[in-house]
Image 1 (tube, rainbow, N blue to C red):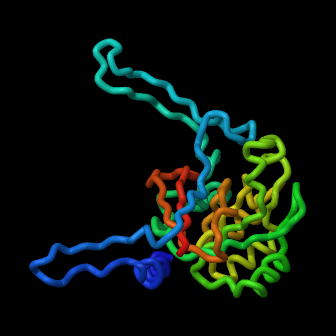
Image 2: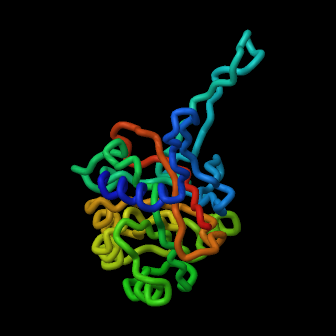
Amino acid sequence: MKKLTAILLTGAIAASLSACSTQAEEPASLGMDLSQYTVVDISHLQEADMPADPALQLPQSDFFGRIGVDGGLHNLEVLSYCVHTGTHMDAPYHVIETGGGIDTVDPLILIGPACVVKLDVPAGSYGITVDDVKAWEEENGEIQSGEAVLFHTGHDALWETDPDEYITNYPYLLPETAQYMVDKGVRYIAMESISPDTTTTESHQILLGNGVGVVENVCNLGDIEADRCYTIGTFPNSQGATGVWTRILALYP
């Protein structure tokens, strides 16, 4: 995976980067001209009252230091939360007893080309089929090995308008669709819902067990006015964690 993502980074994103200067009298530079791209934040704001399964602990801030209180020079807090709330990425260990924690996941996994697979599916609980994906491919080109797949169904609109429905009835991946993602060699999949599964962890296990990342609760995919884009994101290197909050940006020309 590391070799693959490194190749993708070099061949895709790095193609948009300016070359480093090789002249001794000029300072070396490496950068990306973001003025050439539209940038869309596809991550929700992590907050104390966001939609989440009632079994999960939402963020809680406990301030133990305040500026001007008892001579304090800083505001300091302890933030506690379940890592499977908000926009986050799962580690294999989340569903596989012998799987690795988030510290074993390739740090480049969220960086590289992505498909925005827009699907017109029924509202509520719906299992995304292989035929749904193939129909999108017929119109927009086949999903390529190394691409990420961002599933856009419009479900993220319920995040604010109907939080209970958001976490109760949502689009998910049928196990055969998860296997299709594995067979395609995708880098990671991202859902606008709380999970690619409903009452089992089968799709999770198929994906994570085969090196495909799982990102949940993404948003704003409808703002990406292209079928393909690049994503840039990263995550804390937390030993043994079953998941981690993440922030992901989508960029397209």
